[in-house]
Length: 385
Ligand SMILES: [Fe+2]
Image (cartoon, rainbow, N blue to C red; front, side):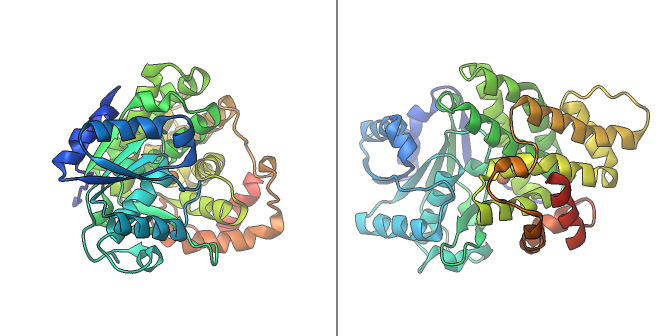
């Protein structure tokens, strides 16, 4: 058995821990900070709160709040130009995966020439960036602890990640109080993204004992707490457990990768504008049903962790039960259960093009526990329709 293990630098967890951002930034040598965030964080006052923590520590702050839901290469380039013009020496990413991804990309563009588009791919970033701190306000993407920034190129609508060890944050502040403001829709969709990360990493061909431990810890928490966080948003225990689950799912994903579900979700976002979490939530039960027989012990164990009580002696039976548990969860969370319900104009004639785009997201497809062909991807889309 061989495996490598990577983590973000420092992870601080706990209610109120975001108030320490100033001292954490100073410890990383900062004097002027760029806060990368979105308009929602500005309008609900969270950006101002984080700014005041930084200023109280004697740091000056430049705010960039133009991050969009599916962030683009162009937005990263704009933020990086602003960073260079203002002389910031540390980046804080505040928000969901989009803001954190942009912050991570900006930190390496501060020291690597040219446009973010030049670095989409694996291992193309040449030099370490300036220090970066991530502060998630959702519980799902895991971006706070991963080495990826997923960006869309506006010119051709293609989505691609900048993947580099230089993108690992130096510090991540996980403050469950910041997730109390999340509406139910965001809670459920990001929570299902975290579950996809954990379950896909768990059943990935790259899985290791380390990623398995993280993945199991995430799956069990999501099975127990996602419904509560969605239905009783002020329950700080449920919010804390979901934030931990997203963290563990992110660590599992960074170390074992994701599988076919994430590849198949890409075209839903890139072509039809469906959110990342929702795309994965919708496809996950269908992909698990396809995969179950190929990694039966893992899927049977996942079904149990999700609260399944199928005590049948048949291993394959218990593996398929995982898909049933996911159907149940998606139903309880009031999420759409098929592609038609999305009402974004997806039709069967799109499936071949979607499947080709999904197959092009090759690494997750290679990690998939069951060998998968273009025709099979098309038939999973058909099932999901
Ligand atoms: Fe994801």
